[in-house]
Image 1: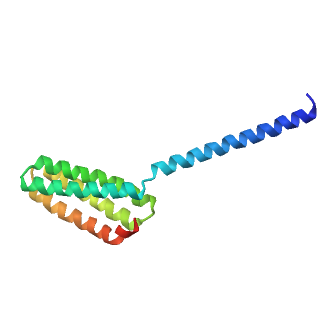
Image 2: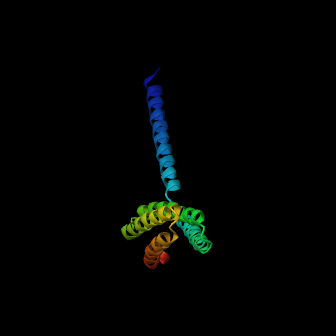
Image 3: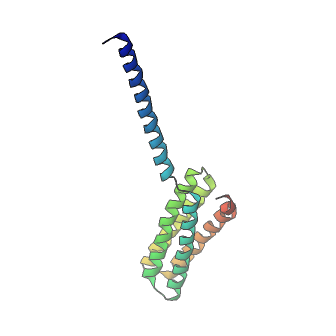
Length: 142
């Protein structure tokens, strides 16, 4: 093999390796971008949370503790997603309020599961106060 062919091979291999590394990097960036929740997803979660709040209110009116617990559990799950959203945006106040709302939803769900709709309702009211505080701070910033 002549030295010219060797250098061409080496140069081609270097370019090919650089291309593979760049492709790997771009693929990694795409995966991160896909796993970070966006504003549209967040808005959908908030709409779902609003629906679950209504479900809770109807369940209390119907004295259906099981349905009340299910609605609060759904809110808790949505708050977990919302916490990830605010964490990605580095909005510490949103993260703190969401954590509080999630904990209150969990406590209220446990009370409802035990049949105590009064305690669940009290927890629900505290939770919605956290939700409202977050909405006052961030509704237009999503």
